[in-house]
Image (cartoon, rainbow, N blue to C red; front, side, top):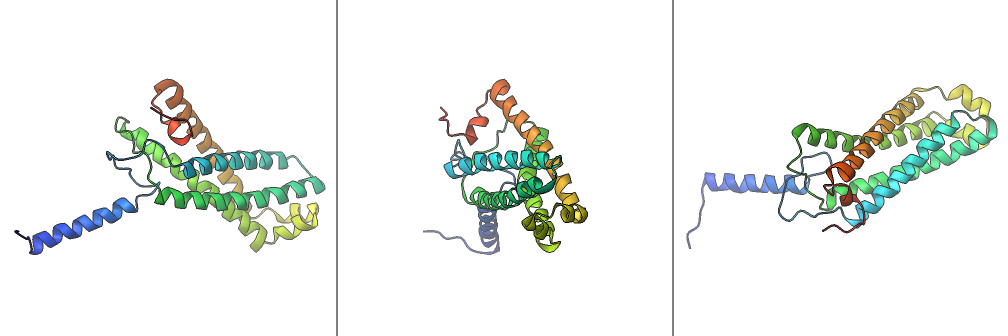
Length: 210
């Protein structure tokens, strides 16, 4: 049997190994390569984590909006719930990110125009990044800047005097950006489901597709 050797063959081997590693490490912020064996749907774990995360995020946004007009002990109680629910949401998003890297996922639709594919990836990236920023700034405000002491003691006046710090400002700004990203994401999903009817939405549901 004839064998091949030499610098050209070694270079081809090296290139193949690098390409293999890139394919294995392809994550939610990278280009998705069209392959013949790509699954038609996301894994059950990712689907479950997706909808749990969506419910938690929407719930936290609603709670955050309600707290803006509240005062006194009732606000402190709701703020305590908001904080711990936010920590749980952050943990869930980290788990989901791990599953996204290690699970196979549907390939991108090659019929999409380039701007649509880039916009989809940008919004997807924001939906991972923004919640994690919100969790991080909330933890910094509560732990490093000591707001948790006011929350735990129910000291509304002390909290009001101390809460205007940069982590809370970033937290609030990030919440508004997250709401905008969620609106775009939902509108895109509705467009694909009811107008395009291309089964893109079905990829992230437990509904069976043909």
